[in-house]
Image 1 (cartoon, rainbow, N blue to C red):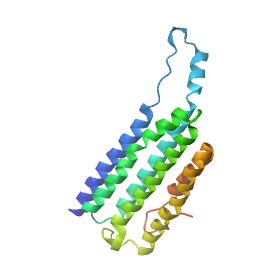
Image 2: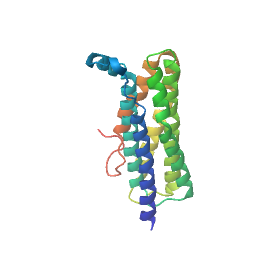
Image 3: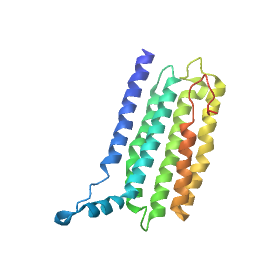
Image 4: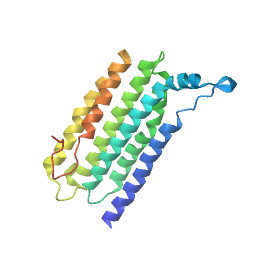
Length: 208
C-alpha cells in the first residue's frame, strides 16, 4: 500500500514537471514578416529570438535536473504522509512557476530591465532551493519516511548540498541587480552541481 501511494504521488508530480516544460516552448513565438518576407528576413528575425532560445534552453535543463533529483528523493522513501504531500505541493507550485520568470528573462535580457529580470529568475531558484530543503526535511527528519537501507550519512550529504547552494543562489540574485550576466552565470553553474547530485544510497552523494 505504501509503495502504491508513493507511486501515485510521483506520477502526479511527473505531470506537473511535464506541464512546466511544455509551457516553456509555448512562449517562443514564430516571427511574422508579412507579405515582404524573405529567407534573409526570416533568418534575421529568428536570430533576434536568441534571448528566448537561451532562456528556454536554460530553464528546460533546470527543470530536467530538478525532475531527476525529485525522482531520486522518491527512491529513498518507504511511504508518504500529509506533511510530505503538502511540502511536495509547494515544490510543484514553484516548478510550474518557472515559465513566468523564463518569459520575463527572454523579453528583457537584451533590453533595459535585464538586471531585474535576471534577479527574478535567480530569486525563483532561491525559493525552489528552499522548497527542496523543506521536502527533504519532511521526509528525513527523524527518518520519518526514509527506507531502512538508506544510511544516515547519505541523508546528511544531501542536506549539506541544499544548504551549500542556498547562499550561492542568494549571492547570484544580488549580483544580478548589478550585472545580469554575472548573476545568471553563477545561478546556472549550480545546475552542474545538481546534475552530479546522486541520491543512490549505495554511492556517494556527490559523484566523483
